[in-house]
Amino acid sequence: MRILTTTALCAVIAGPAFAVEEQDVLATYADIAAAGYGDSLKTAGALQGAVQEFLAAPSAEGLEAARHAWLAARVPYQQTEVFRFGNPMVDDWEGKVNAWPLDEGLIDYVVAEGTAPMAGYDENPASNLNVVANDSFDISGEAVDATEITPVLLEETLHEAGGAEANVATGYHAIEFLLWGQDIGAYDATAGQRPWTDYDTGNACTNGNCDRRAVYLKAATDLLVSDLEFMANAWAEGGDARNSVLEDPNGLSRILTGMGSLSYGEQAGERMQLGLLLNDPEEEHSCFADNTHNDHFYDALGIRNVFAGEYVGVDGTVTQGASLQDLLNEAAPSVADALSDALDRTMLEMTQMKLAAESGFHYDMMLDPGNEAGGALIQAAIDGLVAQTREIERAVVALGADQIAFEGSDSLDNPDAVFE
Image 1 (tube, rainbow, N blue to C red):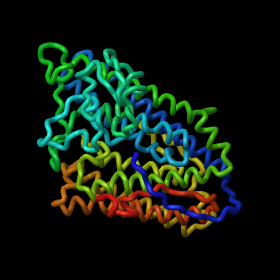
Image 2 (cartoon, rainbow, N blue to C red; image 1 turned 45 degrees about the vertical axis):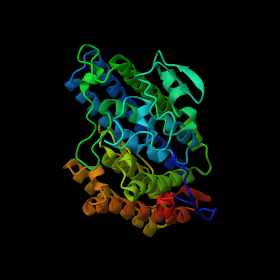
Image 3 (tube, rainbow, N blue to C red; image 1 turned 135 degrees about the vertical axis):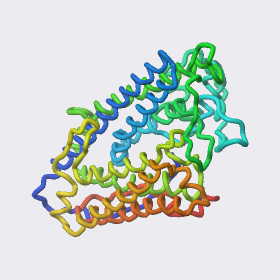
């Protein structure tokens, strides 16, 4: 992640008494986390199965099925991102599964410079290492034997190799790149166009090293499943993440920190405003699949979920209970109404952006500096996130939470620094 500034929010420490029990609110919060990570594990398992079927008998249809499984897997996962901030266990783990942006040349072949945004834009020495094509190489002066591409190699040797955060070797976005390839058409309606023959180990193999590419894809997918299994267990009954929340006397601060930090610094700032300021498709959260509109939509929905105390699972199962909204309704009904309205407004703006993208007006087209309508769609969603953060600040005070800090972003707090 980039270095972020911090917006401190001070609140009174002595809180009012509520009829709704804070412990019940924390239990609902943990239940929603458990359901969300459980769904993430389930859909990642479906992705794993689709990848295995594709690799066993490569075809255009098999690659498309794996891509659809990846897209489906993103829906529940993005709704869990609100649990990252305020929960150190999640924040420490998150980079393994959702790190971005990445220097994709670390993993596989990339197009020649001059025809598309090139990997290595941050002068990362490993940005064009191409592990798929090379079974041995040096990283920071250390020789690496990559004859066998395994989850251990990806996780312990390649991921963030040399201390470079752009060396993303694991997680959703590494898999995304392996399924779609680079999106080399800036500001157009096409996603990555990797051919299925990149995985055909027979005579039709394109771009070489089809066997190693297949092994890398399988290793990355297997690792994603095991990582999500770890986090799903952590939020299940008796899990470390759940217990940490339930035993925290300042547990409400975790919920508010997650809502405010994701809403402001992370989503409005680093994931949306920065890309709009730079007009840079490389700043799309899912740039290979052109799925960024859904990433933003479901992140915002995750914030609303924990406020309302309700999550709808991938199979339609509803997890719900005592909520932060219930507490706020008792403490300050006008603040509760204002925050609820602000969250609804943001979801409306996100929905408009999502519908436009699904109609063919892709997110990278919206980033085109010459496309005022597209920029306006993104900016309206950013403005909604910023406005709801202001209402979350009011909720902090009304609920008497401890002093907390939300993540900030130069993109919002000091835009000129982005261009320095």
